[in-house]
Length: 199
Picture 1: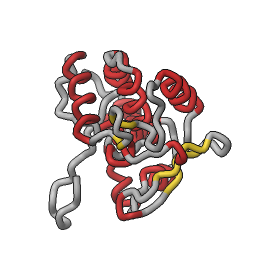
Picture 2: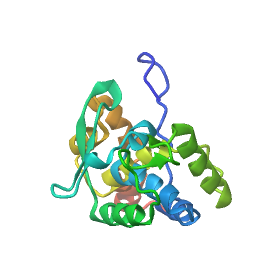
Picture 3: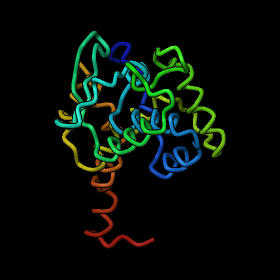
């Protein structure tokens, strides 16, 4: 999904629509696994960022999540949704033993979940509900960005939330956002109206 020179084809981000996301999330019964994928989608995080989240990074007072040393060793803040905060609180109540450092700890050893485990959780849920699209867990991040654009969020804010260095990277989502496409009227439609063309 990178630009390799000016004439290279543009690879569009692969994403899931809202119906597919709902089916995917509903297919997961394990609360920890569900919380992991909700966190990824809710804040548009990379898998590496989700597994490195620590309890101290969740700021419920300011309703923010600190993403420490994201891509390019850059720190950033993302919004903490009220719904996600509630989900995480419920998840932590159910945890036995309760995590000590990482938000999503692996078993008894107190280290963060492995990225491959999260990818496997996503793949298993995807297969369970019969989603045949060639998408991985990273599609939750793409879906987050595109759905925000669909709802009219300024692309500059999305760039900051995703932690993109360049607006060019974020602009890929303009190609997939339904909102922009829906608002563009085909010149044929105009011609049809003005010139009374018949079929």
